[in-house]
Image (cartoon, rainbow, N blue to C red; front, side, top):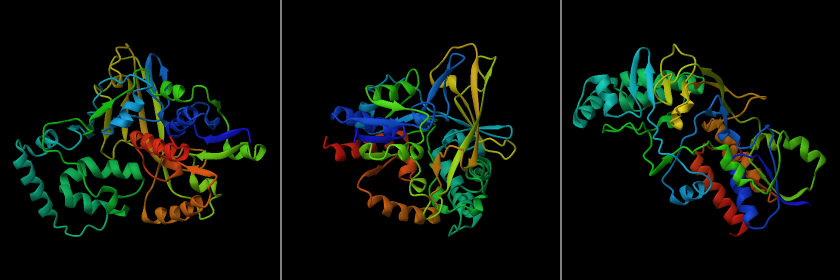
Length: 367
């Protein structure tokens, strides 16, 4: 055995584990099927703008340990995420707050907003929601659901809201203040210079092979490491024994525009059915870039199929039942550690990935 650990995937989970393993004096080989490291947080410079290749990644956390860890690799700016929603010709603030309610209903005070929402709920007459549509209307009424939830959600999940389970939207964040800060977390920002340099520092001194598929690699390199950290699709690892799990993917259309500002904000959600994309990202706003040009990305949510990048799991009851079977198989493999969104079939924000990887590394390496 040449290495202590074979780490499959050079994304955030793999990067954190590799960094911790190196500190513990362990030898690691990281392999990555893409031509670059950093996974879905990969950023690159295009026409003077740092572009988030796989969609907007805005770091936010209330976990000081995680914040102290990540800021050890980069300086973060003071970017605050304040997206807007476009519904036909109307513009609304997100998350749902007093600015949103004032634009919708003309209410001014929190008491007026709460009364209006209660009025809308009663008007709907729903007492036991049976699907996502009924759940959303039950929480906020029909008008807010129609303008800001329905079409965006259907584009995101690729099916009517009436066919989606209630738990996806068990609660909608309603904020009764004039505060457009999307996150409530204590720490928030974007790393100056993008995310890729962070993962480069995590992997410094560790051998990395890109353009390397695990399943092809391991055929020729059986027994290369004492243990494997696998961050790919858990169902694929086990040969889809219990059938494939369901994932969503995102397709991007990225272009440079000869303008200093396209939309005036980093993130605009398109909540009507007229636009096929879910949102447009204008990357320069993440780092307050003064470049005379701008780069935008339109995002299209799609069903995953082989050849595409799986982005996030579809945690329906059916899929979770299948995953439980794969998890049981995984627990029987003491030579493999499964981690990350795909390895654990769980939607993780970046801070949660870091926290999980640190915990796994601590238990594994006895740090």
